[in-house]
Every structure is written in structure tokens, then in C-alpha cells.
Length: 318
Ligand SMILES: Nc1ncnc2c1ncn2[C@@H]1O[C@H](COP(=O)(O)OP(=O)(O)OP(=O)(O)O)[C@@H](O)[C@H]1O
Ligand SMILES: N[C@@H](CCO)C(=O)O
Image (cartoon, rainbow, N blue to C red; front, side, top):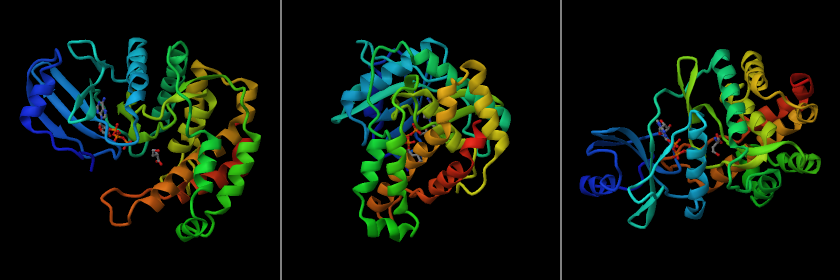
């Protein structure tokens, strides 16, 4: 469920009236997503996505996120441009909450991506990294290994063990990742959360990369590692698909070949990606009541990936 706020027809028409997009025809709440409320808006001028920022997002960071979409869209990356209102503002406030209107992009998120789609995504990711290098604004990664380790350390050990007896050992493994973390890899603005549900595809082509609300300054190879962990396994992390993993890296390197230092770091970066999702999922699991409407994601899905990278990472990225 991802419409937390009711917006009546009059509120919507009034809001849309501030934009040069034609008259409101229809507005449908979008069920996917958990962080924000989203509507598919149809006007006499076209289709748009209206987002109301509900939680996790600090309004002070919206100029960074929305400006990034504009910067990338201007450079032909498949991301939705922000629609600015008649006064030029990228976001407005309704009932005390920030809202933004962005371009609607066609396509569907793949449930079972193919290697050809993974290759196209690798290419789109590398192009995005290059296009973002001259973006004027910056944002620190609050979910970098040091931050996600702290997140995990702050959770109650018994609560972690209640999810799975193997989970508390992620803390010591996380410490090893943080101790080995390289600070000098080539960086840009990275997406940091490019799971299949944040990618829209039309056939084999990437028609959209969405949900940039974890974007931040970071090592480009780390973003590739996150995307690898998100795309190359079944959801539970039990089965690795080598065709998808190789195609993703190949598509990336066709545009931006990895340096020797980046390639050597990939096994560690992939484990850092696992640390990040183990930590955020464990925190959400413990903080979300079992009967909440939102489905909790299992941190163990990323412990399994972590085991896989620890064992096979060196051969995988050689
Ligand atoms: N620009 C867009 N064009 C087309 N569809 C979009 C666009 N942006 C979002 N959507 C649709 O809305 C859904 C929810 O969007 P999104 O994933 O950004 O929600 P969220 O609640 O902000 O994210 P999350 O739950 O991942 O934190 C997506 O799965 C997609 O179907
Ligand atoms: N994509 C993340 C949620 C956003 O942090 C996950 O699957 O855990």
C-alpha cells in the first residue's frame, strides 16, 4: 500500500492548476512502493507521477534528488524529469507535506530479468554514473558501511537472533568489511538501490530508472556491486544466476571499464552491499509490527548473498 494520504478531487485539481500540464482528467493511487504516496495523474497534456513525501525523506534534500533527475534527464539518461510549477519550483507543499510532479515513463519492472536486460541495465548504469559526474550538488551516503554497521550494532542482539540464529554474526563480519573499506575508488553520484522494482523495461531496453531517494556520492563500483546483488540472485539469495551477473558487468564495462583497483575491490564491495541490506532489513523487521500492512523483507536473503560473495567473489569478478 502506498497511498498514505487522501487527496480529494478539488485538492488535486487545485494542485495540478499550478503546473503547465493541461487539466486534470484522472488520478489513481499506485499500490507499489512503501516510502511515499504516489498517484498516476492523467491530464489533457499527458501522464505524470505525483509523489507526496511521507517519511524517510528530509524536505531539505529534495533539491538534491529532484535536481539530479533533471540533470540526468537533460543528458538523455532514462530517468523521469521533474515538472516544475509555473513559478519554477520543483516541489510544492500540500497540507504541510512536500509534493512533486515527475514525468511518467513507460515500461514494467521485470520479475525475472533476462541476461539481455541485465546487460542493458549495466550499460544504463555506467552512462548514468558518467552523466552524474558534473552534477553540482552532493549528498553524503548515510548508508555507507560505517553507517549500516552502526545501525546493526544498535539493534538488540536477542531480537536479531530471533529473526535467525545466524544473523548476529553479521556484526563481526560487518566490522571486517568496514576495516577493509577502500576510500579512494573513483566516485560519482550513485543510485544505491537499483533493484528490479526500481527499473522499468520495454522489452530489452531500459525505459526508466526510478526512485533515486538513496542517491548519494559514492564509489561507482559499489553501485555496480549493489545492482549485481539485487539482480543476479533469486529473491531469497539461494541461487546465483551467472548469466545475469556476467551480462550486467559486461554491459557496464562496455561504457565504463572497471579499473584494476575497482575490479580487485568488487568482492568486498559486494559484501558491503549485503551488509547495507541486511542492516536496513533487520532494522525494518524489528521496528515493523508483524501484522502491519507493509510486507517485511527478510534480512537473511542478503546474508545468503554475503556468504556467496565471501566464498566466490574473487573468482566471480576476476
Ligand atoms: N516516473 C515513473 N514512471 C512510471 N511509473 C512510475 C514512475 N515513478 C514511480 N512509478 C511507479 O510507482 C511505483 C512506486 O514508486 P516508487 O518505487 O518510487 O515508490 P516509493 O514508495 O517512493 O519507493 P520505495 O517503496 O521503493 O521506497 C513504482 O513501482 C512504479 O510502478
Ligand atoms: N531495496 C531495498 C529496500 C530499500 O532500502 C531492499 O530490498 O531491502
